[in-house]
Amino acid sequence: MASYRHTESALIHGGNTIDPLTGAVNIPIYQTSTFQQKGIGLEPEWEYARTGNPTRAALERLIAELEEGTAGFAFASGMAAITAVLSLFRAGERILISSNVYGGTYRVLDKVFSAFDLRYSIVNTEDLQELERAVAPDVKAILVESPANPLMTVTDLAGVAEIAKRHGILSIVDNTFMTPYLQKPLALGADIVLHSGTKYLGGHSDVVAGLAAVKDPELAKRLAFLQNATGGVLGPQDSFLIIRGIKTLAVRMDRHVENAEKVARFLKDHPAVERVYYPGLPDAQGYDINSRQAKNGGVMISFALDDRHDYRKFVASLKLIALAESLGGVESLVCHPATMTHASIPKEIREKVGITDNLIRLSTGIEHIDDLLADLEQAIEASTV
Ligand SMILES: *Cc1c(COP(=O)(O)O)cnc(C)c1O
Image (tube, rainbow, N blue to C red):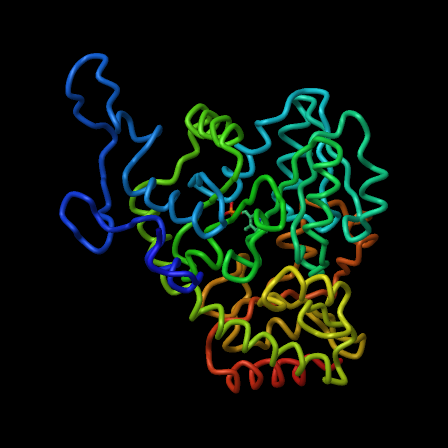
C-alpha cells in the first residue's frame, strides 16, 4: 500500500523511483544499451535497452500510477507514442478523430498510416450523438483530446468511453494539455491515455518525450510488443529529465492555471479582443463538462484580435512572450496555429473548424502575472491599424 493518497505526493514518490541498488533518492541514469546475463536461457530481468532500461522503467511505472493504469510506456516523442498506439490497428480499419486534433496526429494518419490503408474520419466529438452515428462497422477506435488544440474544444471523455465500450472499440485520449494532475482519462473509462511529455510533464522546454498508459493487461502486452518492435523508445537521460519534471508538476500547474485564469479574464474584458477560447471561463463551450471531468480549465488559451488590430504586428511587438511552437514550459509562448501547429491541415478544413488566420494561441507561463499582462497590453496597443 502506498503511504500517500494524493496526486501531489504521487508526482514525487510514485513509481518507486528510488534506486533499489544504492538507495539513491533519484533513479540513476542507466546509460547502457545492454546488460550482462547470468547464463544462457536464464530469463534475465534486463537484456537490451530497447526492450527495457531501469531509468525508463521507473518513468513508465510513474506514469502508470499517475494515470491510474497498470502499465506505462515511454517513447522518444509524443508522435512516437501515437505511432505505436496507431500500430495496434490494421488495414481496412478506421479511427475517428476530433476535428481539432493535434496537427501531427492528423498528419501521421493522413500521410503515413493511410499508405497502409488505415483510415480515419474527422468527427465533431463535442457532439456525442454525431460521434455515435459515425461509429460504422470498420471503426475500431476513437481518438480525442480535451480540451482540443487550438480552440480548446471540450469533449465529454466519459461519454466517449461509454460509446466505445458499447461498440466494443477502443477510446484513446491525448491528455497532453491537462496532465494527470488536472484530468485522469483512464479513471473516466478511456482505454489508452497518451502524452507529449515534451509539454507540461517535462515542463522546462528542454526535452522531447512521449508517454502512454493503459489499464487492461492484454492491451499492455500488445503495446509493450509494439514499443519494442517499432523501437521509438525514450533514452535514459531524457527519462530522468521527465521524472525530474514530474516532481514539480503540481506546483507549476497551480501557478500556470492561476496565471491563465487571469490572462483569460483580461482578454475577455479587453475591447480589442474579438474571441477568447478558454474552458475555464463560465461561458465557454463545454465549461460544465470540463468542470466535471477536470480540476479546472487548464492553461491553454486561444484568442483573436478584432480587425482594428493586426495579429502580425501584435506578435512582433511582444517583448517577454516568445513566438515558438510547443507549450507547457515555465516560459510563456505564443504560436500562430494557421501557419505553425496546424499548417499541415488544409486551409478549407482549418477555416471550417474556426482556426482563422487571426487566431493566436498562448501557453501561459509562470512568470509574474503583472509582467504578462503588461506585455500583452503593450503589444495589443502597438498592433492598432
Ligand atoms: C506536442 C503534442 C503532440 C506531439 O508530441 P511531440 O512530443 O512533439 O512528438 C501530441 N499531442 C499534443 C496535444 C501535443 O501538444
